[in-house]
Amino acid sequence: MKYESQRVAWWFFATCMLLLSLQIVYGFIMGFAHAGYDNLHAIIPFHAARATHTNLLVMWLLCGFMGAAYYIIPEESESELYSPKLALVQLGALVVTGVTAIIGFHFNWWEGRKFLEIPRPLDFLVVIDVLAFIFNIGMTVKNGRRFTTTSLVLFFGLFAAALLYLPGMIPTINQTNDSYWRWWVVHLWVEGVWELIMGGILSFLLIKLTGVDREVIEKWLYVIVGLTFLSGILGTGHHYYFIGTPNYWKWIGGVFSALEPLAFLGMAIYAVTMARKGGRNHPNRNALLWTVGCSIMSFVGAGFLGFAHTIPQVNLYTHGTLITAMHGHLAFWGAYAMIVLAIITYALPNLTGRRRHDAPSAQIAFWTSNIGMLAMTAAFAVAGITQVYLERRVGMDFIVVQREIQVHFVGLILAASLFTFGIGAFIWNFIKYGRPVGEVLPAGASDETPEEAITAGHLEGIA
Ligand code: HEM
Ligand code: HEM
Ligand SMILES: [Fe+2]
Image (cartoon, rainbow, N blue to C red; front, side):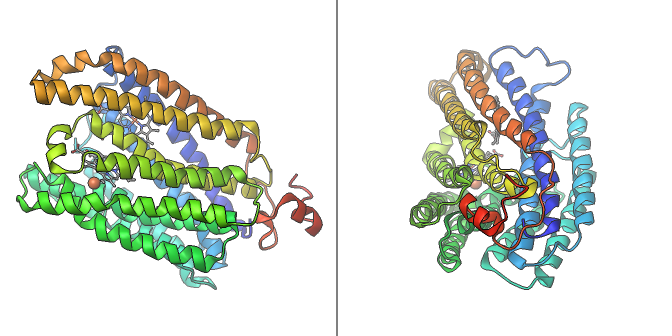
């Protein structure tokens, strides 16, 4: 760690661990409900569990992105954070707003719009909070001694994500208009500006972990930003097929969204090539595993499984079924959960001064959670294909089909247990690292191999 203020990132990462745990609890509640054991229905009905599960997901990912920015931006800009105090206040306010929203869902205080369920008054608090965050990192970039492509892409991604929250707040009583604007937030986040955030974090990690020249790594970043915008903006059309919008969206959405996997393929080739090219044997192999793993799993989950249902002729049958849940899980996991877990894995030894990155629990966490998530995806796929066939080809009633596919959710629960074991190992390791007490190291020291650290006399106190 080079700058004292980078330490605030730890609090964001710790919040991620808490919210992720709670998200998993709600996942199980829904898994059991789908399997026919909806025993908590009176207290936590399915719609409340679902809104809580997905909003907790978005909340912990945003906390992770903010933590990543508070860690990366000072180092890239070569200056202390503008205000670590504001960062902590802003984290506290975000958590209070989020927890209020989630309690509200359980009392039917919600908007019922998938992913944007948070009631309007709380939306305004979220906007103010995110603006405080943008101000804090914006001032750090402005006052910094260095502007790097990595920090600018990360900053612009976060700034655009904040702006794109606003279309979701446009008041309308028309269902089609409401859906139209909702996708500006949901789609343009995950298939647009969040990809820039992911690209920025990926670039930082590859620079640190592979030792390949910054110029080479950042050149790739331009290509990825270009591919993302080229395909992702008009790709929004793949949500406008059957919702009452004009017919031309079928062509536009189909063609441009079919190109979207290219950006994810680009990131996978980019990360694998840099990892192979990097001569430097960075001690934190586990962080490189999460980084390269993220680029590959995001291609599979977002690129491949997204492509699988993006053509209107296919989407006509799969729209709004468990096929969507299949893709949603692996895409969110591969792209955004894994990039957050990658930056946490990279930052923890530097923040806490302890070197636990090759602990067995760290290895177990990576493999078990990933295999568990792939198995969950397979369980959703089997349930989803069966649902599409029986409901949309055979013409059976929705609720009759739901009973037919209950058995596949036993498989989902087993797979999810494996996944949860992996996440448990990750959190256990996080706790073992302890609080951020690491001293501020001389520039570059946090990326030394143990041998280099001994030679330079930096290893004392951090062994
Ligand atoms: C990391 C990037 C991505 C994430 C996190 C993601 C996640 C999701 C989620 C959660 C949904 C359900 C949204 C809702 O119904 O409100 C969804 C829908 C969809 N996604 Fe993605 N996605 C990503 C990338 C892609 C890509 C690259 C494609 C196409 C190549 C794609 C194609 C689709 C389609 C067609 C739907 C609509 C499904 C339906 O009609 O029910 N996604 N995605
Ligand atoms: C123990 C782990 C988990 C279980 C058992 C679980 C289960 C479920 C279930 C049953 C649904 C509802 C599907 C429906 O609408 O019928 C759901 C929705 C969702 N979950 Fe999970 N989940 C788990 C973990 C996760 C994780 C780690 C992520 C993200 C990385 C995630 C992302 C999502 C998303 C994006 C949706 C909405 C999908 C859609 O729009 O169709 N879940 N989950
Ligand atoms: Fe989309």
